[in-house]
Image (cartoon, rainbow, N blue to C red; front, top):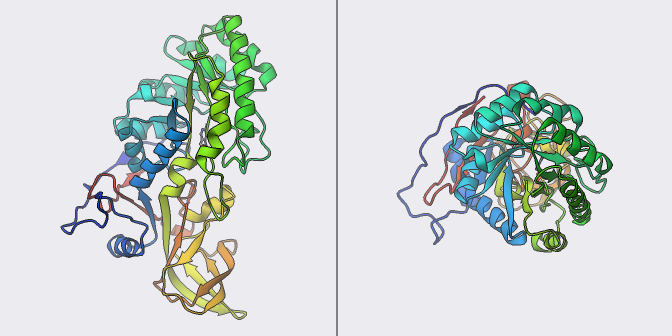
Length: 413
Ligand SMILES: *Cc1c(COP(=O)(O)O)cnc(C)c1O
């Protein structure tokens, strides 16, 4: 995770428009079709991460429909890319920021700071100041030291107190590292009141890629009780509940449909007093299915009877999520089908851990052939490195507007 304190330079080239009509009737192209993938690689080279803004819109709307009356703050962390941020802003969405670098990025894009919250529970004074200077005023805190840091900014900042609900069922349990015990919450709220720091409400994050909605429901019920108690004690306005992220997507394994996943969450939210504004911080759900990775074969070798294919992207690049995020991306070869042989897909670096998949049944490939990884929008490019000087995949966004057949924005940190 970059610390996000270095300045960020953003350049932008105008969307390229083609003279020929795009493929779909509505004016959007499908950049995940074979033809468009090949066209994009011919134009921009490999490896690519192709982000489809139209799929970002689709995901956002799906979650809006599954959680009506919940304001969705897109969490930048899984894919901090301007094309995604712009798409969310154009939809009237909100943003969830965690570092000074993310604050910087969205302010350069003209985001209204009133639509942003800063949710990193542990911040340096410079991080708080950088966010305040950009107009972001809602922060998360989960312990007395952190609340104390806001005494100096009591007239400018407001807090959400993050509560921890352990979630051993989630693929990534985020309540181990952050959040205060529910039993300690009122004490923390009393401290904030003593210091004059306004508390707007509570937040939680049950963990990413949740298996079922049980933890969300349990957390909503516990928070409702804590909010009622805090209001009785007049500890602050407590008019906001932030239900975090965790909404799951399909990888090799299918996730529950989002409408069905959210049904018990809707039911739990319906029991809250109407004055409570509910917000969420979805990251993965918005962007995961909206991007694919495209790598090309650099070379091959037959080892112990099996083909090894060496790609220009791997575990130190876009496939880093297979390590950090415990994800497995469905991969396929973009070649005519032939006899399938057990094969190994390896990344480009000289490290032996850099293997994407073994025992994969693939037609025989040759240098230049393309390998496509699906559901690669979240926690992939964001956590990629340039180990061994293999550059990260170029991010091409498509469908930012009708007729946008592929745009590369330079993001220099
Ligand atoms: C990572 C993170 C998110 C996004 O979570 P998803 O499971 O990707 O939706 C939201 N909020 C916070 C505080 C996070 O750290």
